[in-house]
View: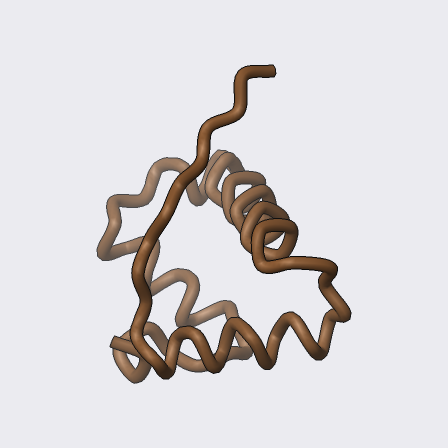
Length: 75
C-alpha cells in the first residue's frame, strides 16, 4: 500500500482532548489513535441508514445517539 502523510492543526482544547483520550486508551501514538478513530468513523458512516444522511443530519444523529460532548459545544 502506498501510504501518504496527512498533517493538520488543531486548537489547544482539541489537542488536550486527544491527549486525554490517548492516555485513557493507552494508545501507542497519535497516528495510531487517529487512524483507529478514522476507521471507526468510516465503519459508522457506511451503515445504510447513516450513509443516507447529509452532514447536518449526521451531526444531529451523532449528538442524539452518542454519550459524549455535543458537536456544538466543541466548536
